[in-house]
Length: 415
Image (tube, rainbow, N blue to C red; front, side, top):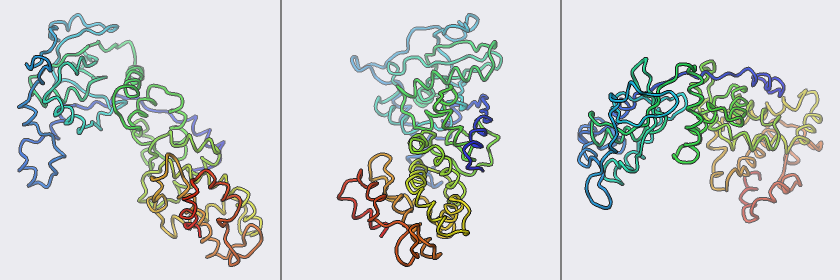
């Protein structure tokens, strides 16, 4: 994979997502998680917390009204069979629908990553299914295949089934699937509503929100996702949209990870992605935001020092890229430094702070130069000093934004 910025831009323009329905039968997924007999699962080596305690949920059933103490009741609305012939493509019709015919769409929704702990927590908090809190789920009725596609309310469907069983009906706003539009157009439209919900209401992980953002057409998410894909690196939670990229071996946790790096240098962000994908040990399947930002900072901050190193060692390297590739090959291939070792401790520093991993990169570069008797940027031999010392202005200036009490421990990683 290239690290030439123009070639990367050309590749970005050729990336096309495949938007196709990926329907998941929600209650089939729920059945895999239920716990009827704790002793049985214990003998199978399954952890109790991995399963939903359906026996307790069924005892509770519907939650009690907080005022009267009586069981809550569903709204008085018609059954689906009573209004089926009057369904509309333009507006929703409220009715009670069966749970067993409802599917989630993993093309943009988190149907493969349902929050089971949230389901359990909600049922236990309300001691049953909370009708009042549930409101109405939103579904499309696919008349051709006689099925419902839920756009909002996946978790509520599962919670009601856990509480009441197979015969339960749930209140839904039902709209007829409009065959005047393509499947891709439907998915894009549904994902826009889902993305707003994921941002404002539902608790979702970054990559889950990122999926609906991309599918709905969010310009920034598309920009950063395509930029990462153009380097032969996948993006967590989105790869079902790109079957043509199935051979990619690593994923970036989120496309927003490159945003901070591009503020430093877009060209060096591209080079950082290339270097990490090429040289990280094979067991490192995820490229995190701190890794990308750290390498981008290294390439940008030490550009002059790298250039002078190449000049002082002619004709060993013909370009800065050749020197950097040798350094990274030494770090991640010869030394087999894994990401967890390289990034160790960085989580204790606020936000996107990359001081610790950057200090380690400097230390590894010093070691590479020493072991390979590289002439240093100022012309000295490597046994006369380090490629970069903690006393140099370029490093002391970088540390100015780091609390002074941490300087000694950070510098010890280099010294």
